[in-house]
Length: 601
Image 1 (cartoon, rainbow, N blue to C red):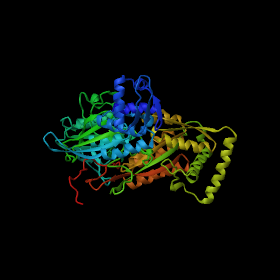
Image 2 (cartoon, helix red, strand yellow):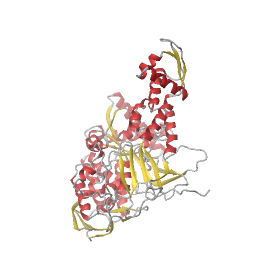
Image 3 (cartoon, rainbow, N blue to C red):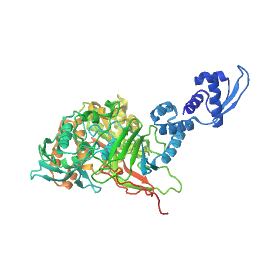
Image 4 (cartoon, rainbow, N blue to C red):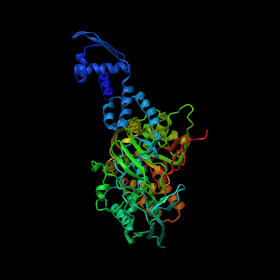
């Protein structure tokens, strides 16, 4: 690998395909090595056909050096070798200057298609070991259900932990750690009966005390966890006996059972040292391995690799794969792969959106999951967006961006069906928008702060450029997920984020509107809260959906919420993949995946 680094040093100094007159002493100084070692390095590079070297004998005589290989090709080879040696982060830092090169990214992505996927090897007893390698473009910061923020983290934890109940492929709620449950007539008392003989990955037996500990832990945290509003409705949790747990709610809450299916409600073991074992990865240098009851256990976790191995004692049946290696890939996707997908679709899945390849019999499948990018206004903050006319002007700017900008990537702004108007109305609004734009430009530009997370910086910058053409002065602020959930939203004017519409859509929309109401002025917030109370009290799913739609229409009509884009989450796979199924978020269920040793042609 060092030879690659040395070539990149030469390229940085002398460039590509240009002949240079240079002494061996100059090279030795640049490479920081002895005269003898420099000669060895030059010979190796010549052997690899990386350079052309015409030597001139004699001290001080200048030789001829020509670099024959593009730097991004060498950088890509360096990264590939680093992957095998688990030195990827170090290599990524050293080739960062070439990371934006499309050529380098194409080299890496083509190699990645061969490196990732299914691989078979012989174990110590000559048994067959099936490994699935999944590349990941997100850092796994946490695998503790209490600390996860990203879909990639949720994907991993869904295979390491289980909930009291689970969601089936058709969206139905099914038994999991509990084999059944009862609910009182007033819908405030829920009793769950646990299965016998379930063990955690460390061999500890699951009991009702683990369930109590998990939810007391959720309720005691100051973190702004997803679905926090639902978890706060728990009045008490009691272990009736070792296999029976009773939840008492403050009021009836029809989304409570749905909440129990999510990764945020995954069950962790009650251990004396649990907080050391389950602490947030960023707080522990050693990145301690989480312990759950799920089909896979974590056997390795660092900045480069998260290794999952099948839990042979899993109560719902052992996984077919013996091992899943989730590899963090610190380079951007090529231009053919949408780099704005990092947050919603971090995996290539079995290969996600593969480059087109002649003769490759790829099949594309969708789990029915959509990612919606949204923009909302902060009217709790005293500022320009308290003015309905300014918000209407922003809506007109967004519609104009979609009609006229010609922007075709994932940052494009899409006007939702509910806000479509006739051509005549568009012309009227365009005229009004033009007048207001001139007024804003004639005076002082209206200053707007746009808040988002790093993955959506590109969308926010494009939005800012469009608004600045219409009389606004925009500043884009990005922050970590934790900061974004805190004061950053309340200090900004516009907030750009996404909504995943999956099998947990009802719960996600409820949480979205509850969170969104925090940065709306008082009367609007009260209206939203009143409808949300109606939703959680309604036992009929269709009625709850109707009320959620009513909130959405209200926010759109008031120009408080704008739909920017939507796209499906899809998976591409080869015929050799068997057992393909999806979890509630549309991600492949790794427990069911398997690969036959021979495929009939």
